[in-house]
Length: 99
Image (cartoon, rainbow, N blue to C red; front, top):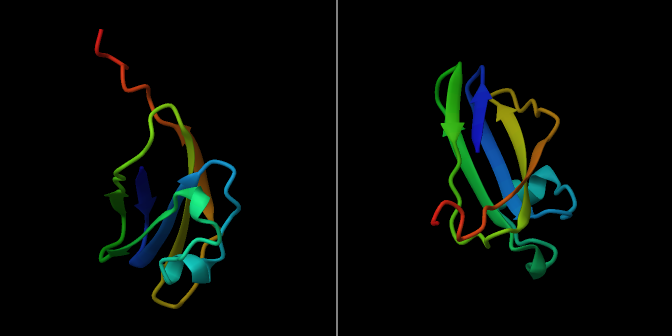
């Protein structure tokens, strides 16, 4: 996932199975734990040190042909929080492009 921001900020994110409810910012800031282990949640934080930046988030151990959702909060130096950003996607088949 690629995220663009126009100012210095902290980017807090959670990846989970699609259908997982929007987490509170405090849950993501504390890096979990997820309310339910079955959500397969992965948490992270990236510090953006310059304005007009793009960051790429990479994830491991995803299951093929599975829908996921990523939730993102951006918090600037003044502790202003954007409304959460979310994106749902489905991983490809393990056979995609192998034939």
